[in-house]
Length: 220
Ligand code: E4P
Image (cartoon, rainbow, N blue to C red; front, side, top):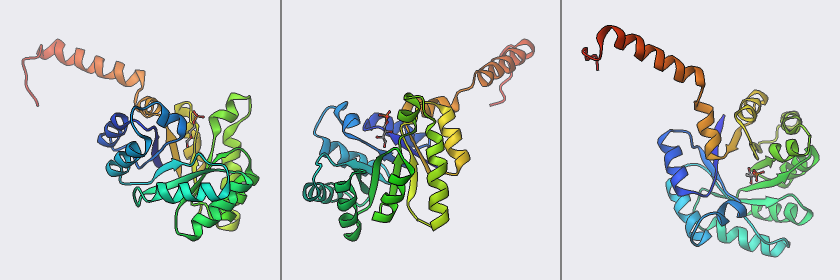
């Protein structure tokens, strides 16, 4: 399973890369608005430091402008893919960009039928938002399971990016479905590593070691 970092923060991306946890990055207008500076310049910097795919979202809602914006964003770098919301116009724009060999990540996916249509329109990625479904008392991971089954049934090559991840359990559940990618905020990547029993275990080992050797033996 690939891990994408769901952020526009250069600092977080650099640290994630050092930890070998970043196979790609997803941004959205909200994430970019949290950073200082011109969004296009930020996307340029991100696409330079990240080897894998970087998602950049369009703001327009009509077909012509989405395509124009998509082309402009795709010109930033070869690893940029264009995030387009799944609407009638979004599906039309996706087909046009796909035919121009520009990769699209259809976003704001909340139903299996939306994911099916996105794949038929030529999307390279779909982003089901599991956390936002859970937020309204649904079970977002059911959606991921359903999309996985549909894509397997018809051999679609579209990759599923499990998005709107809120906790480490979401990541594990996404991995159990076999979804290709999980995109998560920086704090969730950290939580995947942390375990209180690991910390307690280290403390105990060090205490026991020091009881005997009192720090006088150097085994490093
Ligand atoms: C990523 O592609 C999505 O834009 C992001 O995961 C949405 O997360 P949120 O529901 O926490 O805003």
